[in-house]
Image (tube, rainbow, N blue to C red; front, side, top):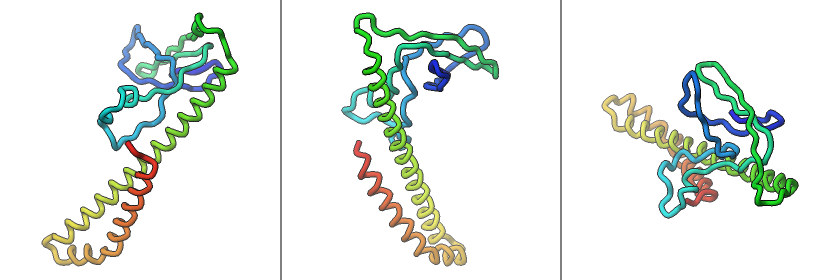
Length: 173
């Protein structure tokens, strides 16, 4: 865990760790927004940075880094310093960070919504396939019960199409 000077959690990273000395190199960024889970391969023609999003860069200041191994936590202080070749402009940096964090929050919310839509589409598809399988089954009573669900299957199909339209209206890889 990495926390800023006020104690706010800004980044959580997971990796290999063991009791004893551990080394971690922090990229000095906030956590990235949620990613879409329905598209596992990087998009063709997109730069590698698109395939591996990251959060905004942190401001110069004091931070704490905590490493937990087997329930035991060690905490150390870290200091991020500004580029000595750039004149400090804390107000502009704060505003830029605020905008970047707002952008990250919006992207996170959008990606989580898209993931929920994708999960709903998968559930509707699974339901429709299960009913189709039952309609073609050997047991007549199971076939009859499956056929009686035709209105519900039609509604599920319509809902799936509406979810697809919504997803397509906000997501265009």
